[in-house]
Image 1 (cartoon, rainbow, N blue to C red):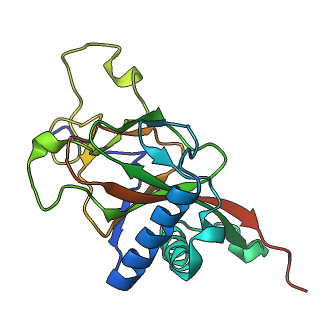
Image 2 (cartoon, rainbow, N blue to C red):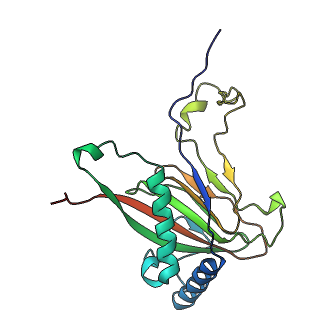
Image 3 (cartoon, helix red, strand yellow):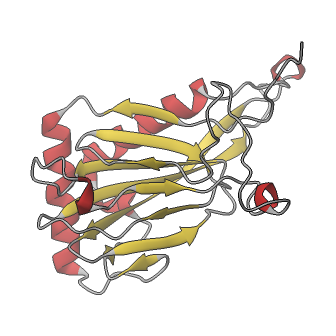
Length: 214
């Protein structure tokens, strides 16, 4: 009987922010920064406001607490195979905010130079609606694309559950949700159709070799 095994999985880490006060503090810091710098920067964002990447400096204690949580997730998602040889690693974080409204989106992109990337949703903008027509999902692209479809446009591989592999899975944002994935994974944000304001924070974590212990 034919056996199927599946290799080369891509990790996706999901957790939730536990402090409503921390979420509120982050929101207030972001909206204050948006007033201070209304132009922001243009990178992958289409229409939305994208802050500079120095949020750790202007985001206050709540921003540092969010980075600490992200670092905990990152540590739990890796294994240091050189630890016995004395090589220890820490993380150098980079952090910014996004504010999106109706019609805004982010094109497919990666985050070169870092190992983990994360997005935390402070307000999903759906205003309590579960209507899928509101869009705004985080969309992930199979890193093997388009190779997995070059043989046939109609044939699909099965996943570990025997179902058709999803080459562009989507995650619907929720207020308080934090999602982490490898920085090399292409991702985008589908056009947001809600009437609310979406506020999110993005984090890059760059591994840094710590000095040897004396």
